[in-house]
Length: 280
Image 1 (cartoon, helix red, strand yellow):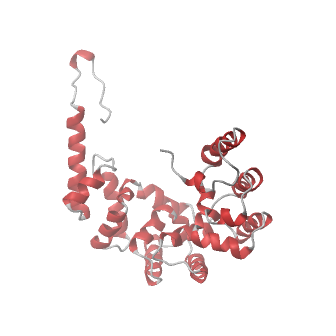
Image 2 (cartoon, rainbow, N blue to C red):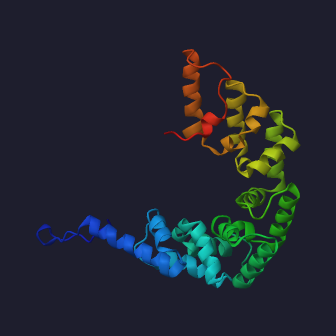
Image 3 (tube, rainbow, N blue to C red):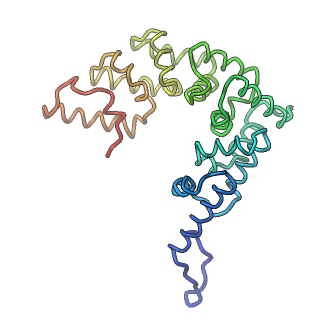
């Protein structure tokens, strides 16, 4: 239930929580059907995970895509694939980031975005992946020259613009200078991997190159020195590097060490998968 203006106790009006929730749900379903082209069934399902009681926030997202060359049908496809995109403040998260967090001061913003979107579509990106880049990795499109080079490099590695991994790969390449990328590569190599093996992991799970050097070393220290895992085993689970050391890796390692100390499990009878599995 949404906050209400406080009144003196004797004059306070109370609303029925279920009634308020019902009105919000009804609005969300209606919005998804009429504004985004959802079927009634899919709108009812998606509305359970969305929280907005008015059109302002979702309208700002819809209008953002409309203003930058997305047709109503294309925008509808984007929203259907990722309804949560309606919850983002596009004006703050995207436009502000692009205009003031990058080198666009002397560029015409709308013209620049039109060129970027045209380029990405020409390279085979789906509209949903383009939307993902704009909403989540807006700095990656601050420079046309830079994104052209990064797209070319990722395609040479075998990434497909149809896959969301390409989007993550762009983030990994754009977030770091060449020297930073090389430093991360060297950290992996110090633990015994070849450059080809690291790039192989990056292709399967590009998130492994978005970690800090300290994070990579911390995870490897536990996996290799404490748990004694072979590199070939770790390489099969590169997504383990994306989990928090403090909240996931270290606590689960402590449990494993306890079980080992009590001889309840045998060493090497488990794999990095225990760090990936969700707690039930």
